Each structure stands twice: as structure tokens, then as C-alpha cells.
Length: 94
Image (spheres, rainbow, N blue to C red):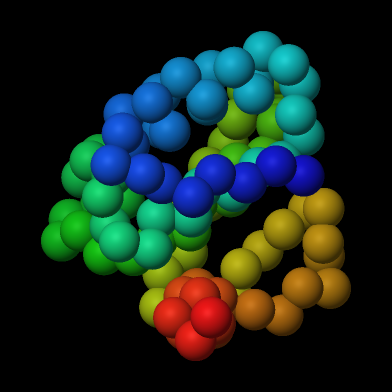
């Protein structure tokens, strides 16, 4: 599994890497946008910290977005029991 932590160059993180990973056949990757930097069409409106899980289905990514206390669903880690809030809070503590 790959993951991307969104940077101030969020267009690259959302557009270029998405297309590259899809072409390479990466089965699942996560976009971790803890600062809500991405565009509204990617993370919604109002903008808020979001974890997007991209799963390759028939050669194309299907994206699921998770915020706040949503339980993150992962095909790679089906037993995972985490929320975005838990991940974001852990990052603040380090």
C-alpha cells in the first residue's frame, strides 16, 4: 500500500500521483490531507481534514472519503479499526 501526505503542491498530490498510481496498478493508496489543503472537488465543502482511500477496481480508482470519526474502510487492511481523528491526533503528538 502507498500513501501520500498532501503538501502545499496538492494539485500534484491529487492529479499526477493519482494517474501514475492508477497506471502502475497500485491496488490501494491513501491520500492523507490533514491540513485540508486539497481543492473542494477533492475533499468537499466546507474543506476539512480528509483521508481518501483509493481502491483499484477494473483498472480505475474508486475513492472513499473519511472524516472526523468515520471508521476508515480498507480492502488491504479489513480489520483496521481507526478513524481520521485518531490518525490526525497521533500526528500532532509526535
